[in-house]
Image: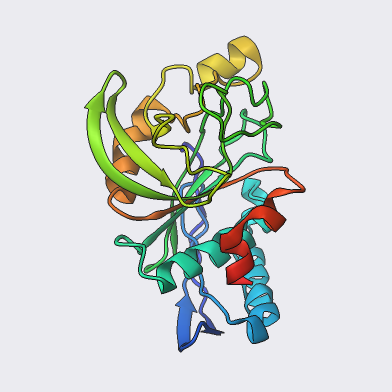
Length: 251
């Protein structure tokens, strides 16, 4: 989060539909910790329009410069809007995206303020030790696999555990991440998620499957996204999109 963003303002009115029409005005700031705008959903008949709008937002905010996959952003918006439309999000002001198509040496957690159109946090995040070293390439929902799981989650309550302040996650995708609770997949801090570890190993340390964060940012991020916000974990998987019921229903 040491990156500095040049502040710019950009107004972009867009129309999205998901049973009801909604208009969003996008304000743009350009930080490495920073602003982004977001979205909305679409019914099947206007899905292509919503996707085009998402791509327009992605390009206007220059998210590619931060490394965020265009596909991760579009799918994240689709799932967020679907979960929001079904009333599952108690904290719908926030959308978090973990892009595991990026190497662990890059800041691949993105936390968006959906109401004020800002990118609030952009930092490192760990993947499971059996998912890969520098890159997360293998994913599993199986207990004791020590792998990360893809898909959409809803954040739950916080607790103090062996890693200090931690955040419980509820996997929303059957067969993909719905064992998150029984696997104790939570957001917590870890000393191995650091630039120091990158310099020593060439990649950040790995977890038992949890999206572990740098100690410095764990508390502010958890306090921002706790109690019912959407978390989307994206990765290079050819099978995930077709298996995800949420993405299918959102299309």
